[in-house]
Image (tube, rainbow, N blue to C red; front, side):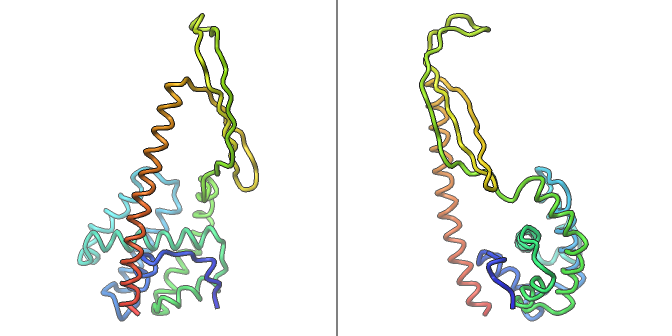
Amino acid sequence: MVDNTFFELSSIVQSNLLSLSDTKTGVSLEEFGTIIDTVCNSLAKIPSTDESQNAIKQLEVNKPLGKLGPQRISELYTSLSKFIIQAASQNISSSQLKSKLKTFNWSSEKIDRLMKVFLVNQSKIQAVLRLYGTSPPKLVDVNWRLDYRLETNTRGPVHELMYIIELIMEDKGRRELLTFTASHAELEDLVNTLKDACHSVKRVALLKLGLQKKGNKLTHEVQ
Protein backbone atom coordinates (compact mmCIF):
# COMPACT_ATOMS: atom_id res chain seq x y z
CA MET A 1 0.00 0.00 0.00
CA VAL A 2 1.45 3.37 -1.03
CA ASP A 3 1.92 6.26 1.39
CA ASN A 4 -0.26 8.96 -0.14
CA THR A 5 1.78 11.68 1.55
CA PHE A 6 4.26 11.16 -1.28
CA PHE A 7 1.61 12.27 -3.76
CA GLU A 8 -0.03 15.55 -2.91
CA LEU A 9 -1.90 15.78 -6.19
CA SER A 10 -4.70 18.23 -6.86
CA SER A 11 -8.15 16.94 -7.65
CA ILE A 12 -7.76 18.16 -11.25
CA VAL A 13 -4.57 16.12 -11.74
CA GLN A 14 -6.10 13.04 -10.15
CA SER A 15 -9.20 13.37 -12.32
CA ASN A 16 -7.10 13.60 -15.50
CA LEU A 17 -5.00 10.60 -14.52
CA LEU A 18 -8.10 8.58 -13.62
CA SER A 19 -9.52 9.39 -17.05
CA LEU A 20 -6.64 7.45 -18.63
CA SER A 21 -8.01 4.15 -17.33
CA ASP A 22 -8.85 1.84 -20.21
CA THR A 23 -12.61 1.93 -19.71
CA LYS A 24 -12.87 5.71 -19.63
CA THR A 25 -10.57 6.94 -22.38
CA GLY A 26 -9.88 6.72 -26.07
CA VAL A 27 -6.11 6.92 -25.49
CA SER A 28 -4.47 3.74 -26.76
CA LEU A 29 -1.31 2.24 -25.30
CA GLU A 30 0.72 3.56 -28.25
CA GLU A 31 -0.73 7.07 -27.87
CA PHE A 32 -0.16 6.95 -24.12
CA GLY A 33 3.45 5.97 -24.77
CA THR A 34 3.91 8.96 -27.08
CA ILE A 35 2.60 11.35 -24.41
CA ILE A 36 4.68 9.93 -21.56
CA ASP A 37 7.82 9.81 -23.75
CA THR A 38 7.36 13.49 -24.58
CA VAL A 39 6.71 14.41 -20.94
CA CYS A 40 9.80 12.62 -19.59
CA ASN A 41 12.07 13.81 -22.39
CA SER A 42 10.97 17.41 -21.76
CA LEU A 43 11.44 17.18 -17.98
CA ALA A 44 14.89 15.61 -18.40
CA LYS A 45 16.15 18.70 -20.23
CA ILE A 46 17.23 22.02 -18.72
CA PRO A 47 13.95 23.94 -19.17
CA SER A 48 13.61 26.93 -21.43
CA THR A 49 10.78 29.45 -21.51
CA ASP A 50 8.98 27.69 -24.36
CA GLU A 51 9.88 24.07 -23.53
CA SER A 52 6.43 22.99 -22.33
CA GLN A 53 4.56 24.81 -25.08
CA ASN A 54 6.81 23.30 -27.75
CA ALA A 55 6.29 19.83 -26.30
CA ILE A 56 2.51 20.28 -26.28
CA LYS A 57 2.54 21.56 -29.86
CA GLN A 58 4.59 18.51 -30.83
CA LEU A 59 1.83 16.29 -29.44
CA GLU A 60 -0.92 18.32 -31.11
CA VAL A 61 0.52 17.71 -34.59
CA ASN A 62 0.76 13.98 -33.92
CA LYS A 63 -1.99 12.51 -36.11
CA PRO A 64 -3.22 9.74 -33.77
CA LEU A 65 -3.38 12.21 -30.87
CA GLY A 66 -5.09 14.91 -32.91
CA LYS A 67 -8.48 13.37 -32.14
CA LEU A 68 -8.10 14.39 -28.48
CA GLY A 69 -7.97 18.11 -29.26
CA PRO A 70 -5.52 20.76 -27.97
CA GLN A 71 -7.21 21.26 -24.59
CA ARG A 72 -7.29 17.56 -23.73
CA ILE A 73 -3.67 17.08 -24.81
CA SER A 74 -2.59 20.05 -22.69
CA GLU A 75 -4.47 18.70 -19.65
CA LEU A 76 -2.90 15.25 -19.94
CA TYR A 77 0.59 16.63 -20.54
CA THR A 78 0.36 18.98 -17.54
CA SER A 79 -1.09 16.36 -15.18
CA LEU A 80 1.44 13.68 -16.14
CA SER A 81 4.25 16.25 -15.79
CA LYS A 82 3.13 17.15 -12.27
CA PHE A 83 2.92 13.48 -11.33
CA ILE A 84 6.39 12.70 -12.70
CA ILE A 85 7.94 15.73 -10.97
CA GLN A 86 6.36 14.71 -7.68
CA ALA A 87 7.62 11.13 -8.02
CA ALA A 88 11.15 12.27 -8.95
CA SER A 89 11.42 14.93 -6.25
CA GLN A 90 10.32 12.49 -3.53
CA ASN A 91 12.68 9.77 -4.86
CA ILE A 92 10.02 7.13 -4.27
CA SER A 93 10.68 3.44 -4.78
CA SER A 94 9.46 1.44 -7.77
CA SER A 95 6.99 -0.42 -5.58
CA GLN A 96 5.51 2.82 -4.25
CA LEU A 97 5.22 4.20 -7.77
CA LYS A 98 3.53 1.06 -9.05
CA SER A 99 1.10 0.99 -6.11
CA LYS A 100 0.07 4.58 -6.77
CA LEU A 101 -0.39 3.99 -10.49
CA LYS A 102 -2.71 1.07 -9.74
CA THR A 103 -5.07 3.47 -7.95
CA PHE A 104 -5.75 5.10 -11.33
CA ASN A 105 -7.16 1.82 -12.67
CA TRP A 106 -4.72 1.75 -15.58
CA SER A 107 -3.95 -1.42 -17.46
CA SER A 108 -0.76 -3.26 -16.49
CA GLU A 109 0.67 -2.33 -19.91
CA LYS A 110 0.25 1.40 -19.29
CA ILE A 111 1.69 1.11 -15.79
CA ASP A 112 4.71 -0.80 -17.11
CA ARG A 113 5.18 1.71 -19.93
CA LEU A 114 5.24 4.71 -17.58
CA MET A 115 7.52 2.99 -15.08
CA LYS A 116 9.99 1.97 -17.80
CA VAL A 117 10.24 5.49 -19.25
CA PHE A 118 10.32 7.12 -15.80
CA LEU A 119 13.13 4.88 -14.50
CA VAL A 120 15.23 5.56 -17.60
CA ASN A 121 14.87 9.34 -17.14
CA GLN A 122 14.61 9.53 -13.35
CA SER A 123 18.22 10.50 -12.63
CA LYS A 124 18.17 13.19 -15.35
CA ILE A 125 14.91 14.68 -14.07
CA GLN A 126 16.25 14.70 -10.51
CA ALA A 127 19.43 16.44 -11.71
CA VAL A 128 17.33 19.19 -13.31
CA LEU A 129 15.26 19.53 -10.12
CA ARG A 130 18.44 19.85 -8.04
CA LEU A 131 19.76 22.47 -10.43
CA TYR A 132 16.70 24.69 -10.12
CA GLY A 133 15.47 23.55 -6.73
CA THR A 134 12.04 22.16 -5.94
CA SER A 135 11.00 25.35 -4.12
CA PRO A 136 12.34 28.91 -3.85
CA PRO A 137 13.95 30.26 -0.63
CA LYS A 138 11.47 31.53 1.96
CA LEU A 139 11.49 35.03 3.36
CA VAL A 140 11.55 34.63 7.16
CA ASP A 141 12.41 38.12 8.41
CA VAL A 142 13.16 41.70 7.32
CA ASN A 143 15.44 44.32 8.90
CA TRP A 144 15.72 47.92 7.78
CA ARG A 145 17.28 51.20 8.78
CA LEU A 146 17.23 54.74 7.44
CA ASP A 147 20.47 56.42 6.44
CA TYR A 148 21.24 59.95 5.30
CA ARG A 149 23.59 60.03 2.34
CA LEU A 150 25.65 63.18 1.93
CA GLU A 151 27.49 62.31 -1.26
CA THR A 152 28.51 59.48 -3.57
CA ASN A 153 31.70 58.75 -5.49
CA THR A 154 29.92 59.10 -8.83
CA ARG A 155 27.30 61.80 -8.20
CA GLY A 156 29.02 64.00 -5.65
CA PRO A 157 26.77 65.75 -3.06
CA VAL A 158 23.28 64.22 -2.97
CA HIS A 159 21.84 64.90 0.52
CA GLU A 160 19.13 62.25 0.37
CA LEU A 161 17.52 59.67 2.60
CA MET A 162 18.35 56.06 1.77
CA TYR A 163 16.73 52.92 3.13
CA ILE A 164 18.96 49.91 3.79
CA ILE A 165 16.88 46.73 3.58
CA GLU A 166 18.00 43.29 4.78
CA LEU A 167 15.95 40.27 3.69
CA ILE A 168 16.61 37.12 5.71
CA MET A 169 15.98 34.08 3.48
CA GLU A 170 15.83 30.42 4.45
CA ASP A 171 16.68 27.66 1.98
CA LYS A 172 16.65 24.02 3.16
CA GLY A 173 17.43 25.02 6.74
CA ARG A 174 20.22 27.43 5.75
CA ARG A 175 19.73 31.17 6.25
CA GLU A 176 21.03 33.75 3.79
CA LEU A 177 21.10 37.54 3.93
CA LEU A 178 20.09 39.65 0.94
CA THR A 179 20.86 43.37 1.34
CA PHE A 180 19.91 46.26 -0.93
CA THR A 181 19.40 50.02 -0.73
CA ALA A 182 16.51 52.08 -2.04
CA SER A 183 15.37 55.67 -2.04
CA HIS A 184 11.96 56.59 -0.68
CA ALA A 185 10.49 56.69 -4.21
CA GLU A 186 12.08 53.33 -5.12
CA LEU A 187 10.77 51.75 -1.91
CA GLU A 188 7.27 53.06 -2.60
CA ASP A 189 7.45 51.55 -6.08
CA LEU A 190 8.58 48.22 -4.60
CA VAL A 191 5.74 48.19 -2.07
CA ASN A 192 3.17 48.95 -4.79
CA THR A 193 4.62 46.16 -6.95
CA LEU A 194 4.37 43.72 -4.03
CA LYS A 195 0.75 44.78 -3.42
CA ASP A 196 -0.04 44.09 -7.09
CA ALA A 197 1.64 40.69 -6.77
CA CYS A 198 -0.45 39.88 -3.67
CA HIS A 199 -3.65 40.80 -5.51
CA SER A 200 -2.60 38.57 -8.42
CA VAL A 201 -1.91 35.65 -6.05
CA LYS A 202 -5.34 36.11 -4.48
CA ARG A 203 -7.00 36.05 -7.91
CA VAL A 204 -5.11 32.87 -8.86
CA ALA A 205 -6.01 31.27 -5.51
CA LEU A 206 -9.69 32.02 -6.06
CA LEU A 207 -9.47 30.63 -9.59
CA LYS A 208 -7.69 27.50 -8.34
CA LEU A 209 -10.34 27.03 -5.66
CA GLY A 210 -13.03 27.18 -8.33
CA LEU A 211 -11.15 24.65 -10.49
CA GLN A 212 -10.67 22.32 -7.51
CA LYS A 213 -14.40 22.37 -6.79
CA LYS A 214 -15.02 21.56 -10.43
CA GLY A 215 -12.38 18.81 -10.26
CA ASN A 216 -13.96 17.29 -7.15
CA LYS A 217 -17.26 17.15 -8.99
CA LEU A 218 -15.61 15.44 -11.98
CA THR A 219 -13.84 12.97 -9.69
CA HIS A 220 -17.13 11.95 -8.08
CA GLU A 221 -18.67 11.51 -11.52
CA VAL A 222 -15.74 9.34 -12.67
CA GLN A 223 -15.96 7.19 -9.55
